[in-house]
Image (cartoon, rainbow over all chains, first blue to last red; front, top):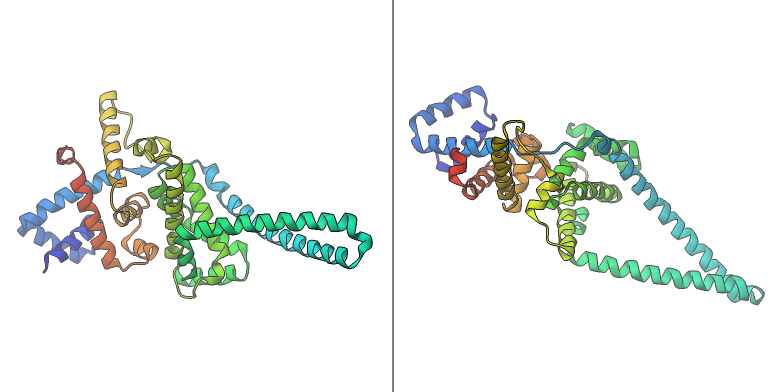
Length: 145
Length: 189
C-alpha cells in the first residue's frame, strides 16, 4: 500500500468514513506502523481543534426572512424590467407622435425628449458599470457553463 | 435531497415556479452562508453575498444544464461573488482577521470555566481562526464544509463538484497545512 493510500485512509478513519471491516484492517496497520500512529495522533488533534470552531448560529429570525428577501429581490427585478420596457415604449411612441404631429410638439415632445435623454444616461451608466464588473467578475463564466 | 427531486425542482424553476426555487433555497441557504463566510469573514456580508448568489442563480436558471448538480453550481457563484465582494471591500478598507472574528463569526468553544481558562480558550480560538483563514482557498473551503457544516465526503464532493478521492486528499493536505501553521506546543496542550 502506498503512503498516499495510508494518508487517505487516515482521513477516512478519523472522520468515521470507514465501514467496520476497513476500520479493523486499518487499526491492524496502525498497531504495526509507528509513523502512521504518530501522524494519526497529530491529525486527530488538528481535527479536534477545528471541530471546536463553529460558526455562530444566526438568530432564527434571520433564517425566517432569508427567503422573503430573495423573493422580494427577484420580484422587484422583474418589476423593474417590465417598467423599463413599458417606459421605453411610451417614450418612443411619444417621440414619434411629437415628430409626426407638430400640434403636440411643445408638451409631449419635450417630455419624451427628457425621458429619452434620462434613459440614455441610465443605459450608458449601467453599461459602463457592467463592463467594469465583467472585467473582474469570474461569476459570469460560471453561470454560462 | 436526492438527484431525482433536485432535477424535478430545477425543471420547475425553469418553468418559473418560485415555490420550487424556495425549496432549493431552504436546502442550501446555511451551507451557502457558511461558504460565503469563509471568504468574506463577516456575518452580514456573508448573508448578503449568499442571498445575492441565489438571486443570480434564479436569473440564470435557464442556462443551467440538465444533469448537473445544483450545489456545485450555486457554490461556484457564491465563491465568485465572495471574491468580488472582497476585492470591492479591499478598496474601502483592509479586512482585519482579528476584527472578523469579533464581527459575529464564530462561537468560542466551551465557555463558562474560570476566567483564566476561558481566556486561554479564546486565545486558542483566535489562533486557530487566523490559521484557518490564512490557508489556501481550496484548503479553507474544504475545512469549512467538513467541520462547520459537518458534511460527509460524499456531500463535500457534490458541493464542490469533485470526486470523493479528491475530497480525501485535499482534506489531508488542508489539515497538514493547518498543522504546520499551528504552534506545535499548542497542539500538544
